[in-house]
Length: 340
Image 1: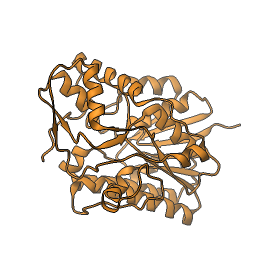
Image 2: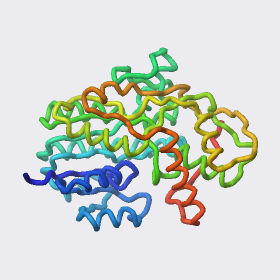
Image 3: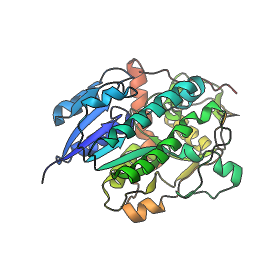
Image 4: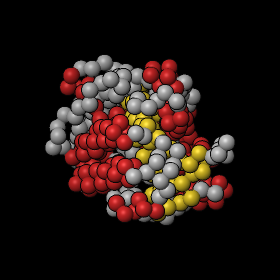
């Protein structure tokens, strides 16, 4: 049987590189990573993965339509991961979030018009219904059928969500009209080593290492369900490769709902923090509660998350502790206090 040709568009990012690692363990794939490497050149981790598994790497700015000319036309699977994300980014450069993510979505869709790609998986987010639960009281854990909703169309916090809504609609409707298969996954707080530096967990590591005291607990009573990267990758590949997933939307996450305070105090115990904690507001636009119902992914795909939040968090904290203490430079700015 011929190897399947796989394109990871945005494959140098956190989830992309981990999908590449997962697929590389099975030699039945020809893997291509396409990325603009906006966070810098390939690090050692990615370089070793590429060299050891004969992965093709294409560097280019895919907000420019002509960049797609260097891609093949006959991939079996295309993972559309490319986007700009991060709460700080939405608040600081909302216009660029709109420009970049919209261009990536549209250019990819138009490239598919003239290709023979068999199936595309578009990666979306629970941010797409950031306002639904708080505004309309929908149940938690929340299923894929929840209406998409944001609370304030003009708030920069929701620019990322708006582009992901566009992507979901775009890929589902283009696929119906152009004849390729398409599946959507909505990620729920995926975390793990090498996830970047604009997320809550690396922020915590930085702050505990700086011995912040009192330690401000932003949004202490808000809840989230954190999904370790290994489980997220397995669920993503399952969604792509399941024979009956065409046209479907799946939540990729866990149902272990915890408060932000629980998360922070566990991290504090890991760092043997002896200071005091002080509750504080959270980022503007952040929802009070979020936890996915993953029954659909369990029953249709066979997904069963294996890594509990404490085990996954401990592994992640250790990675970032080692990174910061090594003196290595971050590829993006780290924690910035929310402007409340």
